[in-house]
Image (cartoon, rainbow, N blue to C red; front, side, top):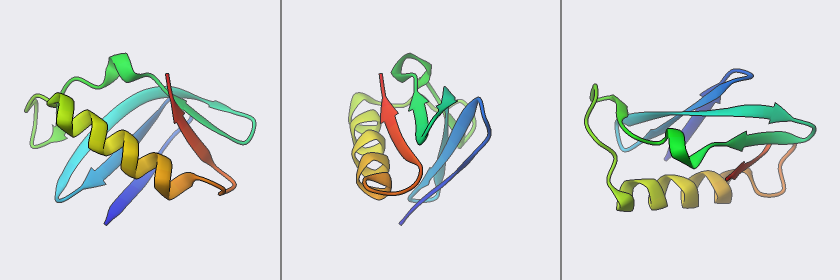
Length: 75
């Protein structure tokens, strides 16, 4: 299960007991995440995100928010 929370400047994505914080910005109808901010897990603290982790997060978040009132995209 993927849980997504956040503010106007970041989202937290919880995935398999780990949490990643991704910087971005609120836009009309959604949120744009900056891939360049995806460096470390927030929980466990400072553990590096692998390329596979990043791909999985992007896939899960994109699938979960597609067609919703809050579409999250990555750039």
